[in-house]
Length: 313
Image (cartoon, rainbow, N blue to C red):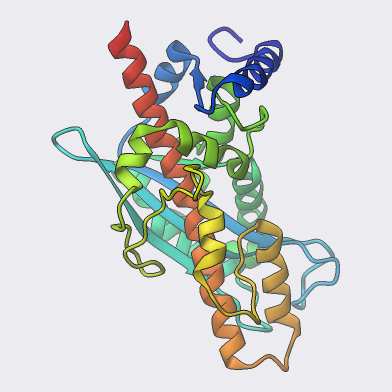
């Protein structure tokens, strides 16, 4: 499509990136200015950033479920809002986690998600996801009466509005990244974890916003997400996350597969101590929160990149 980065352009940007790395340590980026500005112009504050953690076990944990039925056990929800002076604020607005052994979480998950995002239909705003996973999962469990019957008609409608055919469909930030953005060091990938570190490396806005220990939520206190290693390179926030817990006998959850594996352990290991369960529970909350915070970081970086391009023209 016009005003998007096609495959040939992305390949050429990768070649240029490799050539530049041979002569310079600076990280550069490229945006399709017109297309990105047009896309961002459709967004309405407040911006809601959402991420689900799920598992589809071959052997169901709960009666009445079939092999590979999806279980939604967690979500994280950030809000990025605009102040009167044009600056933005980012806050971890809500979260949900349900890991009690023997209890299917899908019904409570839908209820909590409606409580978190139901305001979008009535009050406005835009909801974001990264890739198609959230849409697929939400559509699947909403279509199952055994999970959706506990919701009111208004709650069903508020969640249905977020689906592609709804009145307020979620925006896929992965599509935005693929269509309008390239940054050195990403290898041309649109993976959130592959893109995050090089984007932070290229963004003065993220350095300014996250370069002091001022991020606070229920799961993090006075954390500085923009940090440099001994060579002056930005440390991937997911690496920062993995180092937060110094317990040598346990590994922090820092990748999606580990979250699903942790949930499986909580469901199947009846001999686990309460201390170990509490550790996994806290680690899951921190990991999912970082996913939605990362999404907010991309939006902030793209807005700043677009503003700089506009100022040059």
